[in-house]
Amino acid sequence: MTGESHRPEDRRAAAPTLAIIGDGDGLSCAGDSCELPAAAFPVVGSSDRE
Amino acid sequence: MTEPLKIDIWSDIACPWCYIGKRRLEAGIAAYAAEPGRPPVAVEYHSFQLAPDTPVDFEGSAADFLVRHKRLSEAQVASMIERVTGIAAEEGLRYDYGALQHTNTVKAHQLLHYAKARGLQVEAKERILRAYFVEGRHVGRAEDLAELAAEIGLDGDDVLRSLGEDEYLNAVRADERQAAACGIHAVPFFVIDGRYGVSGAQPAEVFARALATVAAERAPAA
Image (cartoon, rainbow over all chains, first blue to last red; front, top):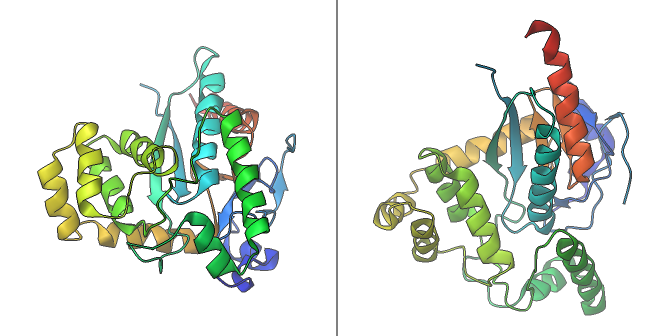
């Protein structure tokens, strides 16, 4: 994997129509790592973080 | 009849947060559905491969893979595994990283498409995830996948045929292209009614609230 495609600005540009519900920092895997946060989308609403 | 709320989920098999996210989503759906009169929910899984270059017969443990590919120290990997195993346990999932057989998941994704065509995709997803994370079974080879498929009522011989022909490989690649088009680079990722996204294994209450929000928006037109 490369880190380039995980930049927040890349995601916002690529996904203009999806409003994100909840905390954008949900536990997720990217590339072959499962430690990277997913906090790259604009956030609508809120949630309790872990 | 009320049209169900559609949840499209991009996820991989070799993704510990995807199984945890599945459990949390299920809990969220149960909480959402506890209130009478709400539209039902329909779930569809889509393919996403985190490490498509992984050999089917990778020799070594999941920890070995992370050490080699991420250049992390063994101590860092052990810490990561301990963390995710602990969170999985909170969701009732007993991950066994000592037994886990790391592999390429493209055939497993093809099986998920095969199962979807026969109305058993959710069952197949659960069976494959459990086999991989809990039971230490190999989920990269057609023969092993056919055995798992037969356990949920699919025709094992026909699954072997389908996987041998790569019948659903194009469907897998189409899912991946759709993910890229939506800007999805991390999984699990949940899209509700094609309008709202939930990124990562969020708490169950986030899923319940998201579903309630979409249902409420629909209500005036109902």
